[in-house]
Length: 397
Image (cartoon, rainbow, N blue to C red; front, side, top):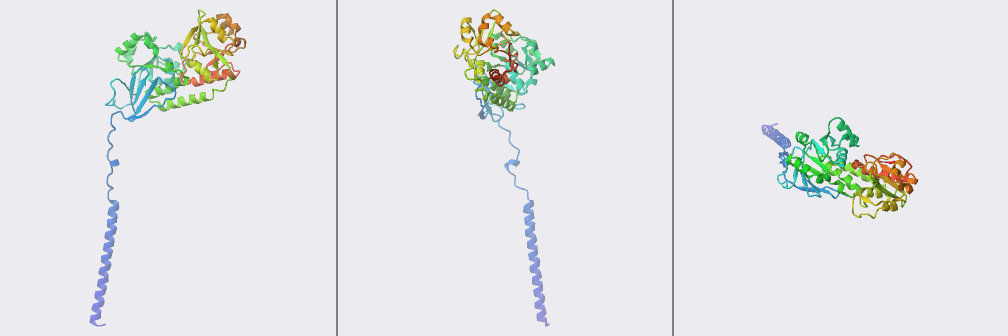
């Protein structure tokens, strides 16, 4: 090989080596850049920055759904607050635990800061609903003595001292109330008959709510007040479940009774006076939902509660009724049919008495507001079965 050819070959080899090394370096640089891009921190997004505190104002979310109740309403807000308005125009703003009152809370609304503790409950139907949602541990006082309670959980709580009797609602123990400093007192509308009690509680700084469920005409509206207590005691889901369960119980009751079956609801005082339920009373509606027809469905239309009835009119209207329902705890407690007839001898002529179809309410009949659907079911069973003992009714023999 001559010198020129050797130099040419050497130059070619060196050039190729240079190209290969250069390409390798470029490739490595490209890979390194790719790795650096892969490992680079991801640009921060808004979600990675600390969230701002929710605005402490009332931003409307929705209305509380109510199917039957007309004596209260509630607006629910995005921050968890609830504005409850009663038919007497009282307004209460329920504020969740650990959250300050909203900056734009209305001046006329009473602030109820959860959790509510040492609550005073004077209304027996209210106590039933509070117990049903599992909030009985928030109650520490009542104006009904243990001997007049027929809700087992309440009797147990009074027996252990968790709930104390503080005297009749017209003369409560104000010193004890002051000592316990309840966050809330729940009374029935009967408190309106004792304004001095209301004034004294106001002096002590006690917030008073009037349970107006007794103004509701439809039985299911009274059950729906469980949603009211669900809001107060942070038991909304429990309240909804209780309401729905009782509605389901009632749905199948309307056509269970024989067509045209009639009934009268009454009691007799120690003076021999007869009282019946007005035609728009909730117990009459319960009877109708159970499939029965009230024999006095034309008296006092639009009126609830009871009325004194002339004995001749009662005799004419109820003599041929298929069933008689006697309010046992209000009209004395006859042990049998003979004792009932002693109260009013003309009852011996009644069809229901002759057929042993006289039924009495149990002591807890008016306290068990959380299970009104089951009471309606008992009325339906009264019409259709031969049982003598039901949960809320029993037959006089």
